[in-house]
Length: 228
Image 1: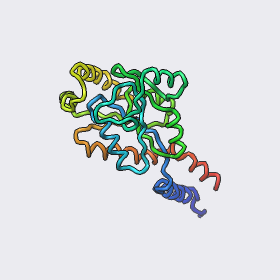
Image 2 (image 1 turned 180 degrees about the horizontal axis):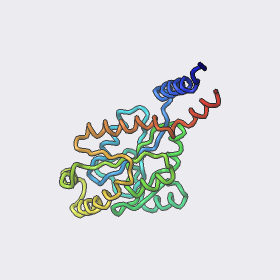
Image 3 (image 1 turned 180 degrees about the vertical axis):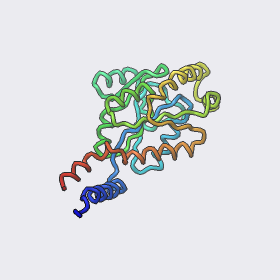
Image 4 (image 1 turned 135 degrees about the vertical axis):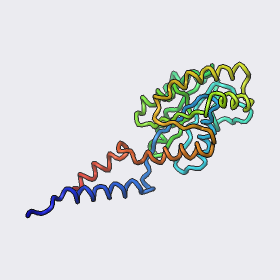
């Protein structure tokens, strides 16, 4: 009888090498993580908690023309600029994406994204659906997460109880929420934010799983066969 084929042994060694590489914490690969949600769903609270509790996650701070709320600082939640400054940045091509949302302009710095990707950081982006679609087109490997409240009544209660906007703004945000929810199927992951701690764990789990995507390990496969 002839000898057993070598392929099964080769394949077994290959799987062991792949598993060893993927589980090496020093080989973490950077990703863009887009988080979108209707206003009041809690995406900003989730993003802040994820960044605070993760060593390799950086928050992408957007530019906006809206007025800061009483608990917000420039460079914290947003970089606050006037419309003239914002339009100048648009003309100079400084935004990876920008959009008008709820009557105000919002934009994401292209320089910041490209710089952070080179450092292999995971970049967390708290942006609207329109901006998320633009980023996904420019960065096809971006991970898209949609955050939802348990139901529409809870969403309304959260918008009212946070006491940050006028009644007219709350109504506009609720009307927009209905349209935003229609885009959920364009996203890859859904997180229901009923309890903040649970939602934070779910988002962190999604981020951790991204390093196992085959697309993120093309260099390993190339190197593996080159060494063969």
